Each structure stands twice: as structure tokens, then as C-alpha cells.
Amino acid sequence: MPQTQKPINIILAYDYCHHGESIAEILLKQVANYNTFKTCSFLELCDRLQQETPDLILLDLTQTNINRIAALISMEFEAKGVPIVVISEHEDENFALQIVRQGAQDHLGLDNLSEVRLKKTINLAIERKTLQNRLEFYMNHFETSNKELENFAYVASHDLQEPLRKIINFGNRLADKCTDQLNEQGLDYVGRMTNA
Image 1 (cartoon, rainbow, N blue to C red):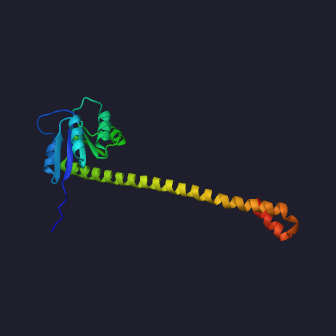
Image 2: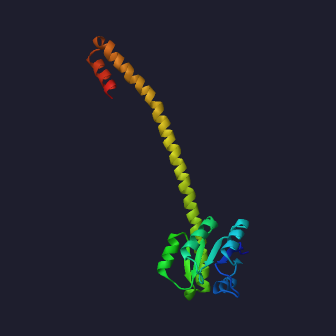
Image 3: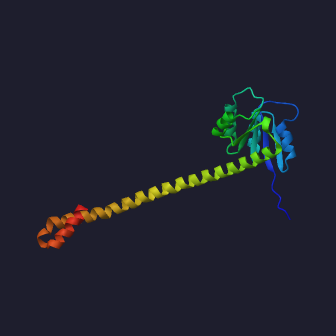
């Protein structure tokens, strides 16, 4: 019996209200196993993110009048770890690089959008974000382990300093008070101990 995958929950967010379906909506309906929720504004998106955590946000910036990078940054802040794929009207490598540097997982242009490409982009964006979150978890764990190791090294170093001080002090006392009672080998040992 084939194993059924849980549906991928996607929020398709617009920065404008429109009537009718966008190309992205039409393509999403054709791709099986996606639950798509449409929001008409960033405010609605923020409200929906308070209620649930989607697997992905498709951020449609095709008809925006606002700064696209600022819109993405505000969405990245509100989404708190949810992968974001930005859709714009055209494939634009410079814009794609800018948004990826600001936290988006990927960029799609409507002029080069297909069902296969959309599905692949969604799946890869979710997987990349999962791996990124896992990497951040391990980095935090690594930093915590390093701090614990530094604390242990400090305590161990501090605990070893007192016995070493005692050895040096007693070596100095031996050298000061018992020099005439020690043979050449004994003097050599005391000298090595106090000079170490």
C-alpha cells in the first residue's frame, strides 16, 4: 500500500487585492497534495501566521508599488522560520540574488513559471529551510558545548593551580632550609621543581 504524504500547507500572499486567480493560484490547484490559503494583504498574512504555521509562503510581488526588499524583510520577520518563495513578474537574476540574501529561499518569475517548476521550487525551498533550521540547531548546540567545555577547562585549570603552587612553595622551602642536607641529585631535583 503506498504511503500517503501529508498535504503541504502554503499561504499565497499578495500585497494587493485582486479579483480572479493568478497564474500561481491556477498552477497550485493543478499540483496535488497542496493546501493553499490565499491572503489579500500582508496584514491578513500576519494574522494567519498568528493562527498557524504554514510549510511555505509564496509571496506574490508582481503588482507591488512598495519596496520589494522591504516587503520581504518584513515577511521574513513575521514568518519566523517559514520558507518564503518570492514571485515577481519576470525572471531577474539580480533581484533573485538580492531576495535570497535577505532570507527568501527562492525566486520565480511569472514569465518562466510552470507546474513542474513551481512544484520543484516549493519542495526544494521547504527542504532547504528544514536543513537550514537543523544546521542552526546544531550550531547552537555546538556553541553551548563549547561554552561548557571552556567552563570546564577554566575550573580544571583553577583547581590544578593550587596543588602546583603548593609544590613550588614546598620546593622553595626545601631549597632554602635543607640545601646543606641534600646531595647533588637532590639539589638537581629541587632546582627542576622550583624552576618549572
